[in-house]
Length: 361
Image (cartoon, rainbow, N blue to C red; front, side):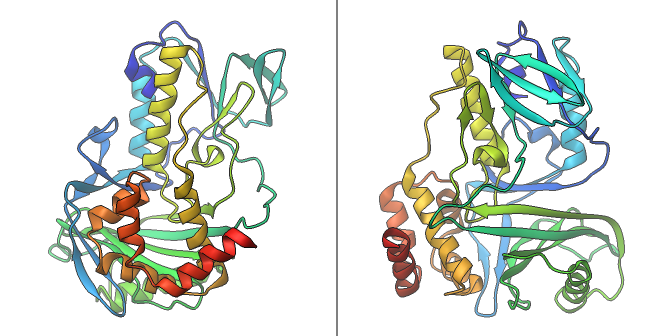
């Protein structure tokens, strides 16, 4: 989509290979953003007011100049296919990818006994879990969400809950978020950061309890369900291998400490397209400052070793800082002085120990 928007690749033959025809709403992307970007026209809902809840605080967050936005998967797929199908140089192939490799100065994709050769392959497939090195962590952000319908007037459609930790924390950092699409419909998502998944009935039980106790809704209609797993890791994924350029989670575009991915993918895609247009190669991209990976590593160390509850960390973060400053920090866009200000608001001893352990062990 970013390539087509640039208008500079009409002379290139592009093949998109996907095993799924993407005809169902299988996921939701939520992200904060300043202004508007490539996919603004399909934003289903955006909020200027967010709330944070835990056992210790209840706070309306100051998110200006950001908006918090929601894009439904099916809208993203339909819009992208509609736009890309306007370009005759783009072809689609709906089948699985077996492997990708380099050969004779080209990148090659093997799919269902077929072989496709190109100048570059942009690969978003994480074929297997990487072997972790010393001081690398691998947690899972796993979540189940319900789109629920209720009587009119149930929700404030202009206000959403970013995090609500008022639930059991026994399985790890655990919270809900509530995103009203109207006064009678909302997405309620149950999210955990932990090493292991739960039995599937546990997700349903937690959602029922939260909707009943916190939202005080004894009855509602479930219109859609979604379930997802995102790796939270400080592993350094290879950005490229010869003419294979890794993108998405496989290219390290999932924020290790938060799991946020959508905006990082957009920024990465923009950078790739800019580099391609200027040099003819998608290589030599500027990497984010290494200190951001260090910050992620320290938080993952704490969550992995359970030296401090996730509820405590995020409560301190949002109680003592503007949400807009936290968002900028989590986007890897802050200056060192801004980062030190935020870090100074976190519990000194556990974070200091985690930082020291990560550096010397």
